[in-house]
Length: 490
Ligand code: TRP
Image 1 (cartoon, rainbow, N blue to C red):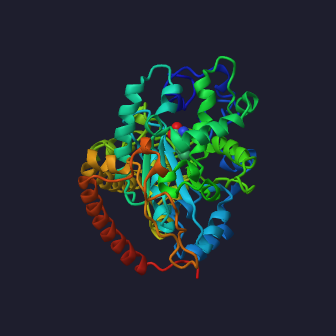
Image 2: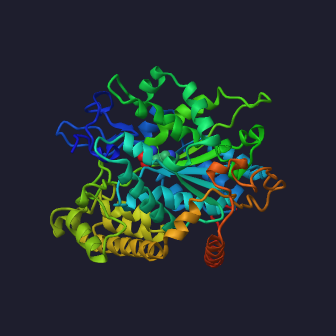
Image 3: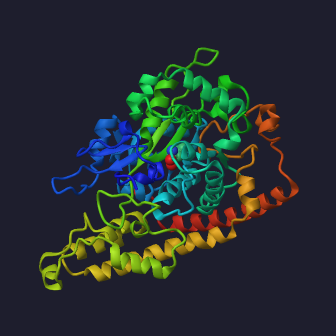
């Protein structure tokens, strides 16, 4: 195991010198996530405001949330209300486009490094799913099997490809709309228009720039150095002719909105820089991706740590049984309560470090109930055991719901999501202009047969019909629910 708390990001491979975390300071990049190391040698909680400053992103503030609600007619997701999705780059430009009925798409991804998906992994996907429902827009999900091979000393290609397939099944189980979602593996999809964008991007990044952004050195393998061009090129709609059509002068004007954890920002800072130097054949700027960043879910051990798939006691896994969840929370969840009941009753608990309370902030939907729990715990009325019981109940419900959906995801369903085919979306129902007519999309991959002919088999069509019906039922239910809870801003 490497020394970094986030060895997971490198799949336990030794961290090359230059990208090992600088001691003491907090380090957040695609390969390291650690809080500042205190004098006692223990990592402190990550200071997210400081990251906003250092990275030069913008904080998501109340005004932006109010505008979001006005434009979409939807109450912001609890992650937005509670500062879990806390930072952005040009998110307001996406709202402008939504308002005008102009197209954009969502892009997110996962590095398939193991089969052990935990509740921290599903957070960006839960949020992305909600964004897709909110904006009714296409979504591409990149599975970076190549990245997980390049950044690990021991994993084989066969191994990461196996994880890719099973992780894709987990992602499908989050509940994405099959008509609007394309999931792809780098090993399978690189080629054609996508590869042209990768090469365009790689030509515009010097070794010096890559070193400065990622901290690579002379011993870094060149695959790692090049990989940023691959993750970046997915931000361009022109990489997906089967979805957006083959006219690059048009598709290059369609931006991505990228929901991701804040550690991925360096990739997209670089992509935005490259995009600002790219033009269409008509001399227009290629659209820069917008970003919306989430914070991490603390490990059970408390602030300053991040759940790790390779440390069983640090995480609640999506395949944990109700009993395992209960035992882990009771045994490991760091408590902000006082040592004795007497003292707790007198002084109250500290919700800012209490892991069970932090998990409730992520998973408990009801703001009023959450506030009641906070007040009561801080006043010493609610005891640690009682708080843990509420957290256990919420996590058991969340994980059970996932497992139920996951059990229904079969090979055929993943193949459907991963097939190169046109998508269907409606955009903003209230906007004057709706989705543009896109040439070339319907005949699949813009005639690039290598990437699939865009036609679905009979079985896939049947499957799609079935999934559509399930989606329609879900949408109806959600509508009924929403009708009961009116938006908070007019
Ligand atoms: N590099 C990411 C990981 O290791 C995977 C990824 C690729 C990604 N593209 C993305 C994550 C876009 C968020 C958004 O998990």
